Length: 83
Image (cartoon, rainbow, N blue to C red; front, side):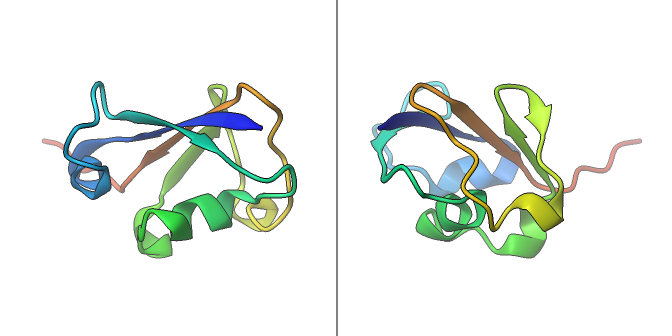
């Protein structure tokens, strides 16, 4: 199945250089988990602070369960501070 992975802020540096719009489309197995996607991009799990599937937050305790369907968009954000 195909999913789109988006990495934001400092995590976007982990995407291939030719990537546009902080997103890459991947062919993945049907039983892939959010943590497996995080690991595939070598994102330290403590930096995968906000993980969304089609705009809906995935709780940390759900990230070891297969949740994705064909066409899903997975967005990953690091912790962000502002002032």
